[in-house]
Image (cartoon, rainbow, N blue to C red; front, side, top):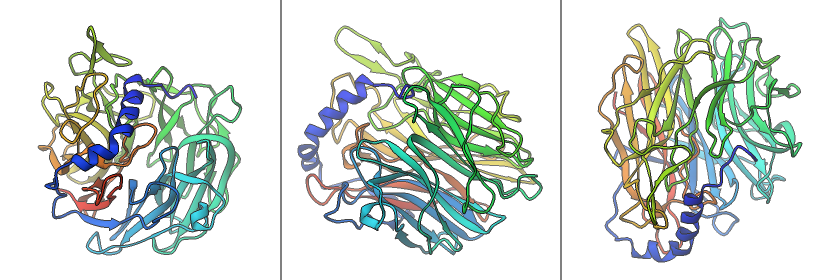
Length: 478
């Protein structure tokens, strides 16, 4: 697929990390950094002795309806694409207590036909009063095969997956529902995805449901071929929406938007938001866009980028005689009223511009009230970002943390950043063919006016070659 780059630094580092993993884990000190006490473990991988890498859960996303929080995530991650199953964890009392479980009818482990399942997204369809998890199944060759949805009336009991579309060649999708009662398309749910089934042409496509995910329209293709990995959908109160993603170049350079103003009947031409300047970290991470929409219709988008740093380049790094070093990435904010015209990019001041902290994998949540627009932003970050080419992550050189920062005025000013958990040795996290993994995306939400987050956190494994990575949830500072 042209949307992916073969990243020499990351691929070479992954090979070295895989070879050294068991000995590195054995050498890590028993005195490990612990998660903060207000973090609650809400699920753990139960699939002992099954395919996939046991005791691994990644990629949590959340949705809130009144006091109910529902989280979906991957369970039993494979080294290649996908996982053994999709898990869920639900709180009916604003995060005080949790119940959790795992979908049925997905992979063979769960009584389903698929080899692997991945990319969970979750929504609440306000009109039809149903929670919906959308996901993609994969074959053994890492080819996406369909979009599946599983429905629940209470966030606790989930139906068998419904095939929303069957495409033997798809990857990267996002799912969202129009929950604005004043919208002419109230109750429409949309899933946008990359279709590479032709083998020669990549196309972004959209499917629409008007009955809470039970039935779906035929795919609506984008009018041009500037297709790429879909990473978000932003729906405005008037019913207009924008598909957001990245495409083109050696590392997904173009951040793009594809608007629709007719409830998904058609898609407008692709709009270039910016050319990414992104240097890959050692951890699995990509320059994905995350988005949220304020009550006045303003679309906020956050993505990682190194353009405000010295030695930032595209596609990568500054070269020296025998090594090269890569610039740390910041998190950037932009906004739009129409999905076509975007504001000047703002660097979110998490760390000084001279720091060696690398920031990536973001989740943005908004709360619009009479006092303005509040932003909750969760993310991962890594210390010691500028490792030389050929170096291997160790317990002391690659340290992963989870962070949080907030704004009470729509991004004009920001609070001091907070470390939610970490630093944790990167080698404790599950390896994949693109590096150790926490997620490709996460989310942040507001519960009764207060910010809330969920993270994949890896604590010290019980033995060499094993894992202890699970999903945690936590309230965040107001």
